[in-house]
Image (cartoon, rainbow, N blue to C red; front, side):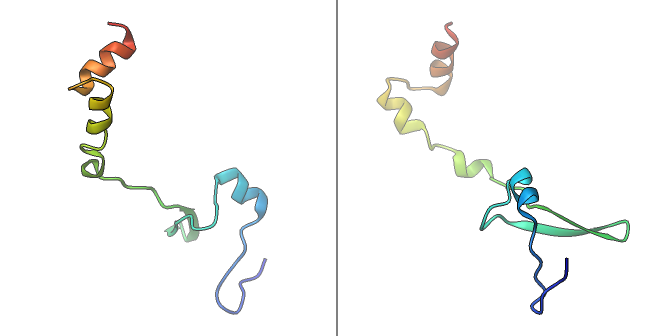
Length: 76
């Protein structure tokens, strides 16, 4: 495999499939023991983004607390 004029390489399809690399997947490069390592960039989702996202839906289901919903699901 060669690096193209614009510094690009093509990741073989079997490797893209194996590691779930799709268009728009963010990757990062690291230097490890004098080699270049390419890996998927870990997704970082702050908990603040999730806070309060389900409250309205739980209320529609008749729950005022998530803990009550979990207890019902677990059959307690």
